[in-house]
Each structure stands twice: as C-alpha cells, then as structure tokens.
Image (tube, rainbow, N blue to C red; front, top):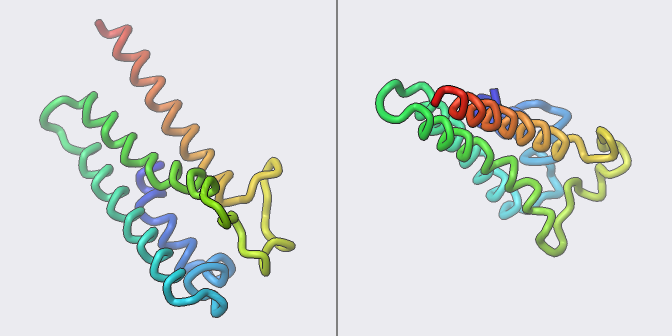
Length: 136
C-alpha cells in the first residue's frame, strides 16, 4: 500500500486532483523553478515506488532483504517531506493557502499522510522482524 501510494500519490496530489494541484503545479504564483522541483518530486516518487514494488514482488534471492530494501525505498519520499521542514524558509503550505489548509491532529494534511505512511512501514518492518525471530 505504501509503495503504491509512493508511486501514484505525488502525481495525483500535485498534478491531477484539482483542489490540491492548484496549490502545486497548477499554482500560477509558483515560478517555473518551483514547478520544476515539484515535477522532480513527482518523478522521484514514481521511480521509488515502481522500483520498490518491483523488488517486493520479485521471487528470487533473499526475500527478507528485498522486503527491507523495498521498505527503505518506500520511506524516502515520506521522510523527505518531514526533512524538508528543517531547511530555512520552507513551509508545508504556501501563505495564500494557509487559512484553508486541512490539518489532522494539528499537522498539515500532507505531513499527516507522510506520518501514516511511515507508521505503516514501521509496523510492517516490526512484524517482519518479529516473524524472522520466531521462525529461527
């Protein structure tokens, strides 16, 4: 689920879904270079999701190592969203949309989604590690 969301989530949110895309690639106030970096993010998410899914469904080699690699790839986009807040002058929302931005538990919606994806990945890795210990 996380890898599939990594594959198509940024594309849908930043380009396709009108209410969200108007805040991103369809935002006339964004300069071309900002749109370039958003498109770069969309492409990176799609590549990480596709590569992670390919690794996950592969039936050759060390399945556990492939699972961990796929989980790591699936985390990159979502960790990057949180990491972006550490850079000076960044914000989860543009000021023009701050008043009508959705929040969940006081967190910007997109960061909440990132948190849910990371919790899901952490749970999957924890379950897999527990399974590895009990199968020895």
